[in-house]
Image 1: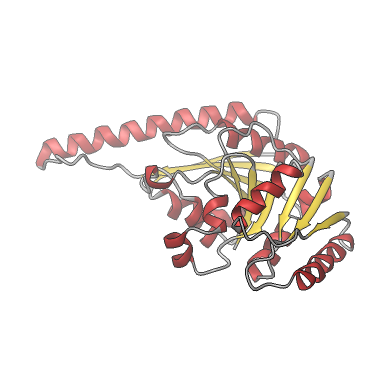
Image 2: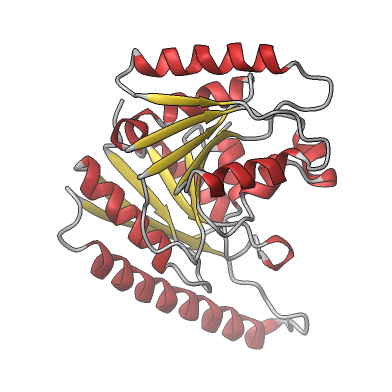
Amino acid sequence: MAYATVMVSLALDESNEACLEAAGQIAERFDAGIIGIVASQFNPPLYFTSGEQAQNLIDQGLASLKKRMSELEAQFRKATKNRAKHVEWRCAIDFPARYILQEVRCADIVVSGLDRGTLSDPLVLASPKDLVMQAGRPLLIVPDMVNWFDLRSVLVAWKDTPEARRAIVDSLPMLRKAKNVIVAEIVEAGGSRPAAVSRVRDVVAWLSRHGVSASELVPEKDGGRDATAQLDGIATDVGAGVVVAGAYGHSRFRELILGGMTQHLITQSSRCVLLSH
């Protein structure tokens, strides 16, 4: 497996510099192509009227959207110039998540900005939650503060779930290029540390058969911190530039209501995160 085509999801009204830089670096490292993609729907104001005045308002709104998309295309082409095997642009007046999900068949990996919580407008921005759940492709989330795709140290957040197994397979191309790979499992309440060590050793051995040299890490139980805090601490200690994890190991409803590891990973702003579902 390789990343032959990178799709980068651009936000209509947010900064895209970090995502474009990460997508460009992935294309350079894997000799890949890049597809830039954006979509938005016109959102009529609350005082929306009717008749000819309404049509004029719609026409103005659509013209403004198309102008902004043209500006984003220019930014995309400038940022990717001479960096990719091929460059392609796709845009539409449509719901962002729906449009990206119907186009993602042509990509190996999708690059997106982080989740902005209550500030996200589904008419102008594709939520990482929707993309990772439905794309059938790994999603690389790039925070605004991250200005390069750092593969010096990659942390695999292991949990023995189908999502984590898919994530580690999806991340193999980047793990092969990483200088340091650490596979870590957090022992949660009621769990057995020896069992966790055995699982992590299996994963490390599997990686070695795929040309990836990795080390294992299973910290002692820490009753004072939850799993997200422990993972953040490990990522900081090993200097992880990327965290690889499975998305929504529990039900999505539970994570949306109670939080959870996935919710934390798509909103944290310290490092890139590769998620698969």
